[in-house]
Image 1 (cartoon, one colour):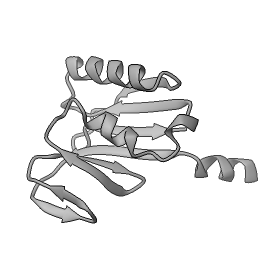
Image 2 (cartoon, helix red, strand yellow):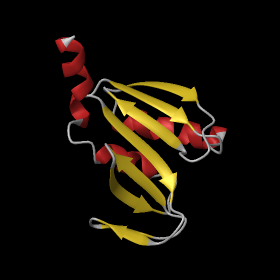
Image 3 (spheres, helix red, strand yellow):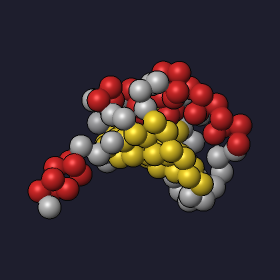
Length: 116
């Protein structure tokens, strides 16, 4: 059980959603309809370029180069083109990551991500 608990500590969670209103959280300015990147329950980035949001999220993972597995659960509104573009960008930027994808169909989060 101790090994399991230690392993869980190394898993990083990420979510991408859309802002419903303008605000500022910590040092992140958020505009209405911006994409918001969250790493381990902390907002790390906000912006309006949906093609860059996953890479911005991954840039904010402290030990990204020590990770070997990235699981991405796509939300209901993610198009096939967006999936392909994001996967290509991740593969070229982080070739050490094995990527597993699932269609989750969730409505609030465009992407749910875990890194091990």
